[in-house]
Image 1 (tube, rainbow, N blue to C red):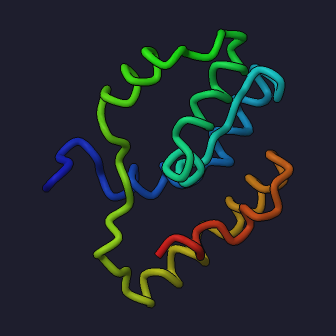
Image 2 (tube, rainbow, N blue to C red):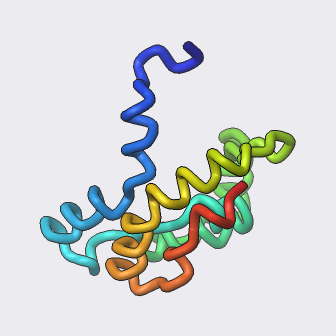
Length: 120
């Protein structure tokens, strides 16, 4: 196995964001959590990091700081050369639908309802 410590069940549970987020919101409140979607970070790393600094009340890095961040390593990206089987896509979309609907409610972002249908 490529990830010997990760069972298939744990991989599936990782996508059930609303389960975890609802608990964190109950404990910490919405104003104390910043949620950034991976695709937003991949699309605009600097913008995402800037929003993290602002959320934490930290000054934005100067150009030397940005260079250090830039060379800390490339972001992970989705394997764009691999295509998911349509049957698997439907199975996962159906499974995650109620979790994505709840996530959309929790974050006030209706685009998340069909989130997993966009990533193929």
